[in-house]
Length: 464
Ligand SMILES: Cc1cc2nc3c(=O)[nH]c(=O)nc-3n(C[C@H](O)[C@H](O)[C@H](O)COP(=O)(O)OP(=O)(O)OC[C@H]3O[C@@H](n4cnc5c(N)ncnc54)[C@H](O)[C@@H]3O)c2cc1C
Image (tube, rainbow, N blue to C red; front, side, top):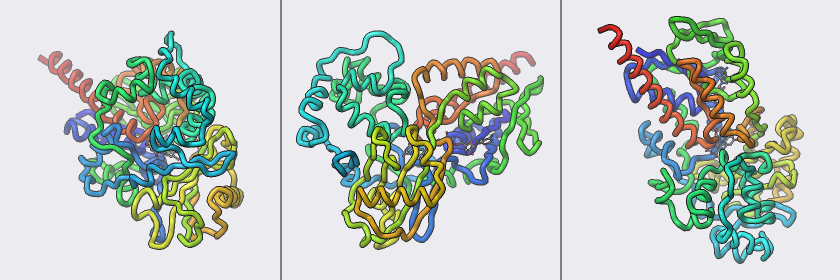
């Protein structure tokens, strides 16, 4: 048997445990989770007919790793796709109020989001040559070079607000949007890459399209994973450190408990990984600690439908970070997926904080709810009190892949390789989307199995 201890019971840790057990009975896997509940950022609060996600709202079908995981867990009949009409109706709340984002090229030409000069700048991206040199480039620099300053200020800031809640001047284009950087490299331009279609891009032939979730929310995925593991994950056990001797690893719990292991996978956030390896390898801990995170507060608000003056029949809106508003955006959850609010009610999910306004995520409930209420009044005309509310705060929400991230990750992996049987996982390295976490889990499970097989054949050769 190969004893594997996985530190962290978020989607990364749980899907890795599941994939390992699926690959081979040789693995004895134990997941240790510090919090009283499994799932990390993923979870669903169900109350009074409302279903509020604590973190992710869904996963795209552009990569199939999470769809495949759901199918393997027998959840295929519970998959729900985001409403196609709602997905087309996305808004921006800026100096001009609530404005619909264009859903296609014609829509874009007609829209007043950009001036003609800004639109022409985007069209010229077709003609611009690819970047020379190999240095890392920020999302803002990449976008300014490709589509011009206006589209970068208006559109790219909004996209980065919606996905990373980070600063486009600091985030690495290659680490945050590898597909676009690849398109420029392969086709000379992102536009040409998009038009050339998907077949040329590795792994980009989706079985399906759109955004997906599960009928009762993504918490179902966590419950299904936990119930399928041979050894039930242990919650309420924080790992404090690691030591290694001839017999392998010893995992030390914050409660003084100890657990032996052949392989240890740290699937907790990078700053927690840093604390765990602090005594084992100071330099490794320092690099891990240098991966920055933003702070986000998630506010779920339920209203009587009659109390929402506008028809919230879309996906929601983004309040770009450059405007430094008190919120980052609002998802109109009950329009996106069925069953998120009881009959006659709507559910909104508001994101606040982010890289530019971290203090907002730390405001107490009264101040935060008052600020959110004022924003909703301004953008959507809502003046009534909610009939349901729930606040979730993430003090380290989404890792920020700042310039130099890829080089840092390569260094961390090389350095961790000096400690045989110690591996890093989680969303701090190769992508922050759920799909990235579930895809990395499959890749890591293959890697762990290959090295276990190698060790066993070595041991057999020594014995004979
Ligand atoms: C507000 C928000 C919205 C998002 N929206 C989307 C979205 O719509 N679509 C999408 O694809 N992605 C989205 N994401 C990103 C996605 O949810 C995360 O990247 C993903 O869930 C991270 O999973 P993880 O397992 O790597 O880390 P985590 O979920 O952080 O799990 C790590 C686990 O490790 C545990 N842990 C920490 N320290 C220790 C320790 N010392 N010992 C033991 N356990 C420990 C933690 O308690 C936690 O449970 C969103 C994230 C946030 C915060």
